[in-house]
Length: 74
Image 1 (cartoon, rainbow, N blue to C red):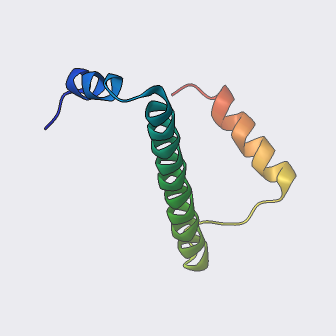
Image 2: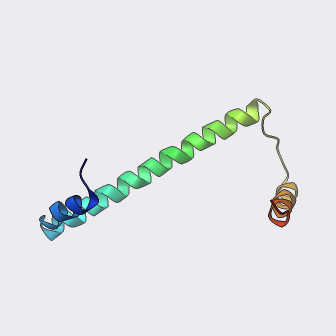
């Protein structure tokens, strides 16, 4: 496995335009992975809701529940 320091050394040997391109590629891949993660979380939440593991709340109920969670000591 390549260390971060070694990877940086290799990248610094690239021309600036290729370094910029690499940064954009890495950022786009991060965005795509995060998008996939959010979609998976959504699928899991929907499945939990459909099986009754989660209940629906009105906005007021959800806000009250969040406030209770924040106010209660753990």
